[in-house]
Amino acid sequence: GNLYSRLVHLDGDHVAVQIQDTPGCIQEDCVQVLDSLSRCVKWAEGFLLVYSITDYSSYQSVRPLYQYIRKVHPDARTPIIIVGNKADLLHARQVQAKEGPQLANELGSLFLEISTSDDSQGVCDVFHYLCKEVSKLQHAGSTDRRRSSIIPRPKSPNMQDLKRRFKQALSSKVK
Image (cartoon, rainbow, N blue to C red; front, side):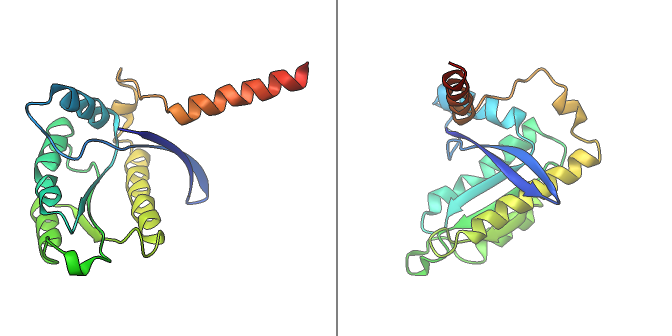
């Protein structure tokens, strides 16, 4: 999946955030997908499990993903938010409105339903809320163990490209 880096304004601070877009489902027969998912889950400190309300199979993939994350992060404080997407497509809804909150309740997670086409603010709010939850845990000292682990965080291709362009710009001004 793709890795995105953003600078987020959070409670008066600017925080560097890396967002890893991962495969949507766990397939036991696909070793490469499992390996990629495993690497992402190990370094992550918070999770959004997003499904489409117009695709029941995407909804069904949430529980196994949640269980997989909890195997890697057994600490129940690691924030996992379940997000139903495409809330604007009610005419094509395959996942009933009560199913998302019900699943989140069973798993002990927060549930939100958003539409990315109606208003991007809902998407921003979801990420902002997750960042706040992760920040709370970091301030409580619960992530120090993970931060000092030997699992390297992947470098963002966007940041690498940005650094390369910055160096090129500096070297051209020096000449």
